[in-house]
Length: 86
Image (tube, rainbow, N blue to C red; front, side):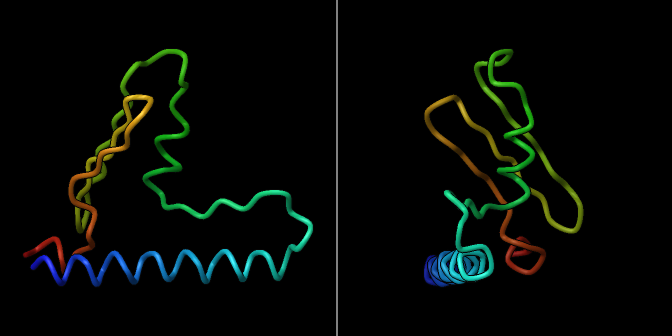
């Protein structure tokens, strides 16, 4: 199981690097490029000045809980419908 998760993480990092290269090739004059996922985007929509801890829970075919205390991100689940069944 540990090796499967490690392979999944390495694939995720590889995909992020490829996406950054593609975006930089298409829009070379961008000052900064950020590639993330829907969890990070949803969490960023919560106003920082109102809450000390931000947390979202997404549930569907799979599920994930993702949060931030202003310093550290934490994630439980979110490995997709196939890995989420293990």
